[in-house]
Amino acid sequence: MKKTRIDEYDKGDALADRLFFFLRQQGLPIEKVSRIRPAVFKVYSPDTAYIIKRYDYAKMEQQRSFLQALQRTGFRQTAYLQLFPGGGHSLPFAQSHWLLYEYLEHQEAFSFETAENRREALNLLDGYHQAARLLPASLRPYVPMLPWLEKWTARTERFRRCAPLISSHIGRERTEAFLDWADHSLRQLRLLPLHTELHSYLHGDLIEHNFIKGSSLSLIDFDCVSVGPVVYDYIKYSVCILPSLHWSHEELRTYMQPYWDSEAFWAGLLFPSDILREWDYFLSLPVPQQPVFRDRLVAFTLHQYDARAAFAAAVQEAASQ
Image (cartoon, rainbow, N blue to C red; front, side):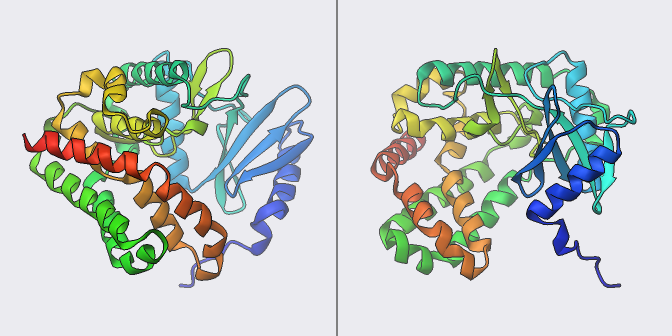
């Protein structure tokens, strides 16, 4: 049976226009719909704004179940679901299912460049994980297990297969260094009993733009939620703040003291997840689209490379002792 194709009319501004009229028909008093990303739109009403996101049915059910359960724990610092005028949490439209979120607005820009912001974000992550411990076991069927090593292995192998192309942009020595760090990290992680680590519901995407600085700091976008070792979120957070710390081993210690003696933490931190993720995305693009992103990707890859290499060397030396 031929797979149904989403019509070209469902893309870009055309979809925003259709969504505007559909939501008005459903009784939502809106004045404008603007696209943020292909599956994410901002909806303006006279008194407030919302975010509306597009999912398949399974993902919609996951987000609905997870966010409702998280809200019941008393955790307040995220964007929760809003009811549509008919009283439901979701609406079917354009061969998809849509969820309506409260819109949280920045009162000031947030970045990891200041120590105050880094500490506040870390405290928020701690607070989220305290709440996550209260989530019921009945939520587990809706949330997948984190395919940690499988995902990292796949990205490493794709990077390796494309090493000649990548080397032509960043140099052979740097390409081989990224692969060496990835291989070393994966070897160490495979030797560790990760199943004995504390497991919980992971956020999984702790980049700057998922922190909203309003009257208090909020953590949004749980689309990557999974169940896995809690240390994984702290590895991800560390990778996000290390560029602001100029890859300083000692600076990181002031934030990650509770994980300082964790073998899983250090093995995971060596993995260049940010670099391999961005190259994985770049390599997935159609060839005609790649030049648009190539220069920015090369600059991102080479930024603070020497400091990162020194950090990686220190981590490997410490692991060998």
